Amino acid sequence: MSDEEETQPTDVQKIEIAKWFLLNAPAGEIQYIAKDMKAVLQDETLYITAAAQAFPLYNKSHMICLDFPDRSGEVMVTPFSEIGENEYLDPRTAQVAIVDHVNQVCRRARPANDEELPTPYIEEYRYALDIEVTKYVSEAYPKGICSVHCVNGKDVEEPGMDFELVVVVSAARLSPQNFCNGSWRSIWNVEFKDEAQLVEVRGTLQVGAHYFEEGNVQLDAKHEYKDSTMFTSPEDSAHSVTTIIRHHETEYLNSLQTSYSKLPDATFKDLRRKLPVTRTLFPWHNTSQFSLRKDIQKSLGLEKKK
Image (cartoon, rainbow, N blue to C red; front, top):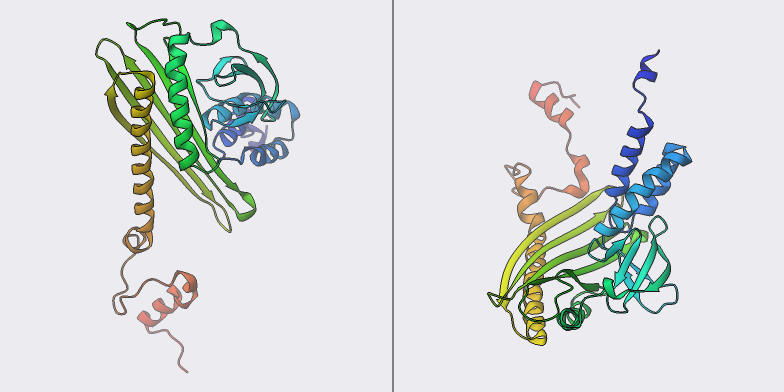
């Protein structure tokens, strides 16, 4: 057996490698990666296996939004809306979408069963929060989408028990023709504690960006927040929780903008030595004027005489 044959990856390893590339595709780029993986594998069975495992995980982590076939609404594909294999609940329309993950489309829809929906008491809080968050997202994120789900206590019928809602926000700006894509994702766990009359809010914010014109530059930033407010009526609680979300997301976005506005004059400067004589900024646009060979020849006295 030759060395080349010994180092050849197994089918299982090929599938795992393909999955890794698919799962790490930047926002809006998985279909491009999938096309390349299919060409590299040159095996339809291996590609189908890898895609079937990777696409559902990718779609849920990126919280993609799909239209219902009849255009009656849209559903966010998230771990919190998943109620069965390839089935995702849209609480606004009380419909369940059957999703084709690999093609990223909703094939059909059905009405949600009563067991899949929260009680009227919980729905009152979920609906009020959905209204407030939708209003905020429409103002803060162009083409942003959001959804509110009950993840614990959906069978609670009256005050006296704890329950938990989850707010998911997703926004993407995809411009592959200009070699750049970006996304914003935030998940807010909102836990209503009846005995303490307190609402605990925990948020995870994630920003991704990819610029690939004559290069490959990626940003993957993540931050977490904790806050709380009083447990009051559905409308008042929804307003207070949305105010918390708005405050922390605005604060984080401003901190990112401040950090990256300082990159040319601060961070990049720290990555190189200062020019000792001119004290001028490094001319990144014309690096050809510097030559290590010339410097070495000069220091050794080997430079050519004119």
